[in-house]
Image 1 (spheres, rainbow, N blue to C red):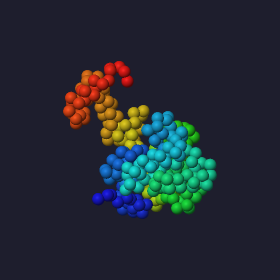
Image 2: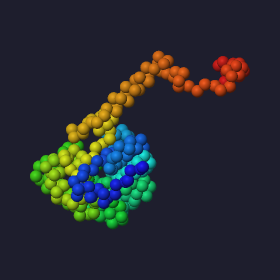
Image 3: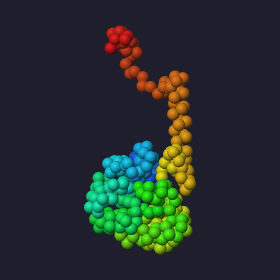
Length: 287
């Protein structure tokens, strides 16, 4: 029996009941399928695919076409899981109209259940416009990779009173604009705990300590992304190491002529003599 997809109301009620929400990023069919089989509450098709999958040094080069394509694959892999599509840099910064148009693409073309976008006070009108179009929104504050240059790089946020106050105002603006949930990234657990109590919508954390739920990048938690591992990541597998070892074993077998063996081939069904007669008709070296 297929799992029942979580709804927005389920996620909000989970906060009220004190039940944690688990979600993870996924960018392809098999990973999404495995996450759904495991019972994941939510999947985020994050613009982190730029670094984890496409090999960029950051998220900003990721396009709408990239995101839509990967969201489609994830939806095929996890038809019964709540999926959020991440709006890439440039897809909502210009105007409310652009934001609504691109958000609609996620719902219409990729069949996601919601979208996520970065920012607080500065994107309040964008969130209001998108939710006004009937599209569920997840906000994202704290360390926001798309604007990391303005934040001084990939650094924790809200560690002093001044910046914490700014983040509290951002969080309030996101909720007031109509978002049904908010993701806080790389902020102190003391601030996350306050936001969970301050806001009525679910507060999800990534590198932010205990919250109403947790998000991790699949490449980080599976040990698949080797460039770096953030401090806040708990690694549950070493997939990259396993893949490299598998490739090495395959190379060794090929070089030693151990692969393919007889169990890996399809034998002829006509008598071998018939094939030998066929082969005699062709001179070696002459196609």
